[in-house]
Length: 238
Image (cartoon, rainbow, N blue to C red; front, side, top):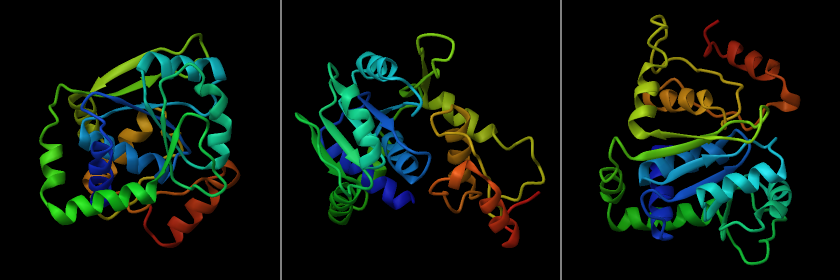
């Protein structure tokens, strides 16, 4: 995962995205979020997660306020949903994980995960230290993410968090569970990745070795199949 994230980060940098620029996310809570999210953090690019339940006015407001020029989507279905929301925004590039049946909206470029990873791997093959050099440019006080409220109590409001804000939370996430064996267990979260706590848990998992796999999506919104599988493999603590 780290190698892929580094490659993705280098590709984003190669697209001309600079430190502090915004990349918005309209994705499912799966690898289509986790991989570019980590890549953005490595590259010093600010992430802007958007709830899939946000209405058109809220999505457009978020894109306008953050001046996001790039939007990550999971697949053609979500691309179709969000396309009408892009009017009067600065989004000109759409990054998509599953490009089957996807078409770029007028005035935008559609770029696949696969093509970005290929570009990043090429840069790493030419300079194996390129990923490390990119990460070392990020400072603790740099803005890392802007997380918007869901809008259920009014107009969504953005909360600005630095890398230091997030890293301190990540490192403290599981300190209250001393029985958790680092590198030997799987942490399961059923929160959407747009929720402030869900990415925190996943990042702690990547840091501490708890998270070995990311569920593609919960079938029918049920945790039962996933929990049953994990308990059978004895990889999940009750």
